[in-house]
Length: 68
Image (cartoon, rainbow, N blue to C red):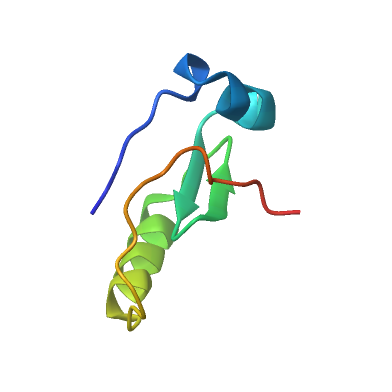
């Protein structure tokens, strides 16, 4: 599942990521900022899709966090 979120419409996400647009999160972890490499992104999505899921996760933008 892919969710596209306009982070400028969410004050918290804008504070976290405004200087990193675009920012791509995969399974809640930062994958890329500023530039997105198509091959690397495709590989990461395919890898994430193969990982076993312990629980179902729905998108909750209030819980997204920036990797440090």
